[in-house]
Image (cartoon, rainbow, N blue to C red; front, side, top):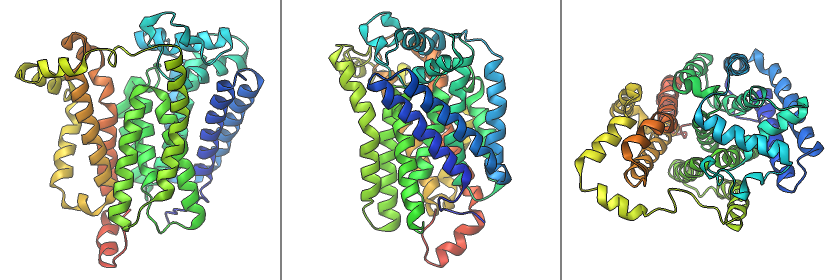
Length: 404
């Protein structure tokens, strides 16, 4: 029987891993990049081993299995793509060599987007310090381990082992090579789904489970904002939709959820203050976004080009139609929330591309497939929640209970 309390060992281990990752980042933020950060890294590894006790739960077993496979693949593949080598691994190597979370804020190598958050590079740099030397394989593979906490927490939101298995397949299908080659977009997708899944757990949770959900949501949202800039947009959308979902479903204002969201934004705020203090900017934010948007908006060709690029992975287009046409979507708050966040983020991506200062065709060719990953995985999660709760939806609605 599915349990919404915090007694699930896999969920506890996942929260421990997230706490360790954020503690590692907090130590580095205060200048303790050495032993304290390494001890936090080791604590995360211990929690990862603890999560193996959850193998008896079929839902968690799927997630542990695919992460194990992904770790092997990550260790066996080189870091040869532009973004992994020139952004994430470059920032990680600078942190490793200079013993500073803020190494990239000196403005060196402006092509590497020095304003990007440093959580993932720090994690890779700390992994290199633990083993005692730098290379571009193990630090990249260490990042893959951070897929385990959100996947365990997503699995906890599902009721059946087969739904968790389908979710595991969906993660592999959507993420593909981006799960192991050093790109961060697949991580955004997984963490966005996990944050949403945890945030809208129903109010019938016991008190212990409610506090666990708030802590897990705050940790997931904080990590989501610190993966890359787009994570902040996703975190805000998830927070807004989750609050709206709870208000509509439970007829109450979720003050605890609002507080957890506010706390999760603090690490990002501190990073943005450091970036502003270093007088660093972003190529998009520093351009004439409004002028570029107004110039392209009246023309049909740019919009068609953007839609074509974002819809290229057309596997999720039928999912949208399925969700819209399936009446049960509106009875299952998790599915409704997933659809809302996916649609809102798609609109954000469309607006960003329409206002890009770069050549539109080039920008789409180099990034559209990756940045659409959160949209795809959110929609797949919504469909799986519908399937997972097919038999429970009708009886629960008749009994007057809130839907999950």
